[in-house]
Length: 419
Ligand code: 7TS
Image (spheres, rainbow, N blue to C red):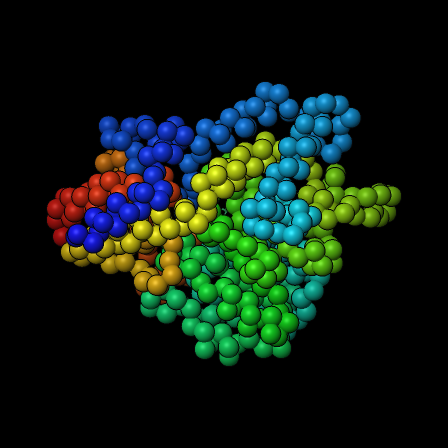
């Protein structure tokens, strides 16, 4: 207990969540007469006033379409939209903003690769390697693609502790492998997969790697040049930004060789009745009017995160997660799924025989928002032989006091459900 207390104090000196909480108006409200404790950050994060204001200001003073209007508002909108692209490139240390395609989020980014890269380069008999712990967004697009192309999916299994089985990866990586697409941080177990090792092994065989970074870009410093990944997909809304905007990063050579995924305005260079030529990257992948206000908000979100410092955010989240895990494990009947040494702040658990939906409902009555269900990872639940879990997931604005309250409420749930 003494160790925990000192850790608590130590961490408070590195990042003080109370300094940032006033920026998040939503957090100060009461739900069911209790102060909101928002522990559903893996689903989506809350938005600071800086993000809300940037969207508000965009609509108040800059609203116009991008890349076409020769008027001041058009220029403001275009500049803001393109500045967001530069900002996103800098956030993940991409060499150039040409490598950032704006999408609706991680799901659309992965679908873009499956369609634009996969349909052009995959052949019957080829294989794509995924892990058994993928979110549906990094599973279904590859199922659709391989079914269409006569190709095949192979899987790196996960072990009981929620880490990957590397010997199996070594066995299934072969001359047939055309892509390795893996989740960077699991939204169920919290496991941070050793992606540098995965990338090295795949690259040794000349195989490109896609990272589903929906849960990692918001919580860890990411440097795509250092990682040397070939594709990286992430979502704005999981990192303080608005919904409906995210990005795909890819190496220039890949983007240049890929065909467009959607056709329409903006993605073309010249158009004739029977055919057309494509715009430069990244614009050839952004058909139609994009989410301009979303890009303004996304930029403000990345500014906000970088002002704090991603390293600082990671360390704080590790501390609050360790603190929560230690306290939760003291509760009788607690089962926590995943115990990887390298992990982020998503904790999936079951408590006795309380159904996760009942528990989430009980916690909601106490003001605590958690997620219950299969977390868009039905195959993970199936392998664990359970229907669902309850999941608490943290961000830097969560406090140790909120964790104390959460643990107290879990204990009272045990008494309430009387198992
Ligand atoms: N990949 C991972 C690892 C995710 O956790 C999610 C969303 C996605 C992809 C999809 O992101 P989107 O922004 O395109 O929807 N995960 C969750 C979750 O765990 N609970 O709600 C959404």
